[in-house]
Length: 128
Image (cartoon, rainbow, N blue to C red):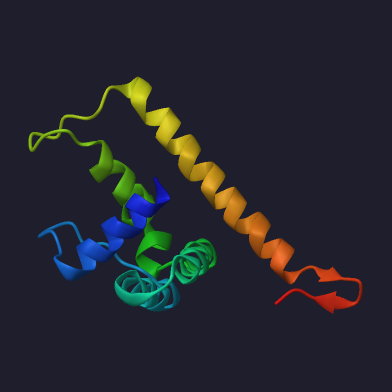
């Protein structure tokens, strides 16, 4: 689900949907472009590590637009767009939405937990 979110943000940046502006803070925007470049020529490990850096940047660096209203939060905008099933604004059946929200929640928790492990000193040393 989160990889789809990353693809949504990259695609929306390359080919914006008129009237559906998605705003990112400068830091996750830079991480997203690094990810975009790695998708073409990076190794699987490089891409995995960059996905982590990108998702962590999204967690800690929020755009002014997203802070002003929840409807401008990129993740909220993705969830809405992902669950639309036609151009008339019809949503996916409500029972199908919570599992997707749970996938997102657990991915973000895992991202934060991994970042803690990366920063935690081990026997007087820090992990790379």
